[in-house]
Length: 425
Image (cartoon, rainbow, N blue to C red; front, side):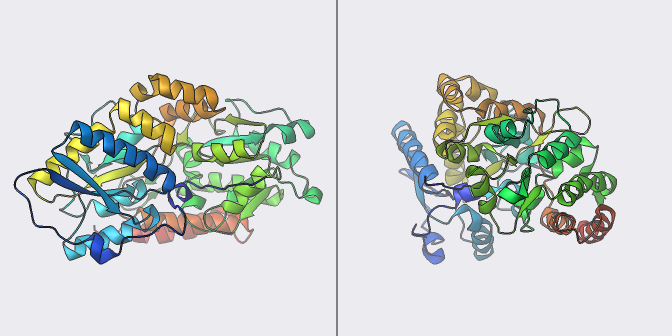
């Protein structure tokens, strides 16, 4: 059995052999054309799978719009996009469209070269997709990729340990209790797992717990965190898992070891997203997908939408870029992208199309991720978010490793995060 492992960002990372366009070539300015077809330069960020689907869609668009050409030459991978776009903006030579992670949008949107997209993005998109592209009440990008978090359960391990599968009403104490019962360290089995590399993958699973408890990432004053109390309670769940020795802590970026262990049957349940379903199916696991547990009984999860961010290279190119993205995110094209590239539908209209309904019928658990979009929140679009996330990651790792109590870890987190939030931006 060959186990492939994908993470949310790893899905976009692609093979190492993929040729990257040198920065100088990708950023080279072309003379502005005033007649004939207009060329839109798109730094797509996709790997082989996503790029194949995107090329098919671009070909269809160009057949329908012979006056617009889409140049997909920007082969930089999504993980490197922020650095490349930042350098391009500094040099004054930048693309028309770039794939920007949602958590990076607020930083990029500070540039005056980023175009507003309020005439492209409308209310048909799911709420988390709209929130992800809105910065300071302005629509600064177009939704590109949509996901959510739920819990994947190994049904055989639940059955072997006599633990009933959870339902949509379970709570975090139920999760902790189940993880303890599902752990057999003599056989190398863990009840659950958590990323422990101290990166964003470590952090974003904690936000639904904080939101469920009434916390916010940024407080009402805009200069301090809004989860000083709720963060302690959320971290206490991790403390209990650590104390029970029921959590596998993946020390490497990308969480690949965690997912490999789940695919091989050594972890009973893991919070993950729809991008992991192909690997789970390939591993031959008998699995179930259930919503995240809660503290309050109110369904809640997190969505991590990514964006197509547009840069102003003059009226003709800007108009053409908007035309393309308006077409690309319409339901008929969106469903092709969703099925082929691994996104959830951007809208309820896309979800209702027969192509997506067939995909749902063929993929166990996929409907749970889509339904959870109704109760999804997104991370704060704040330029200091990366620093806040870094502080939260340090707190999570210190608690998981038993180096700090939740209260002490949150005190240190608040100190570092508040120092970042207080800086004028």
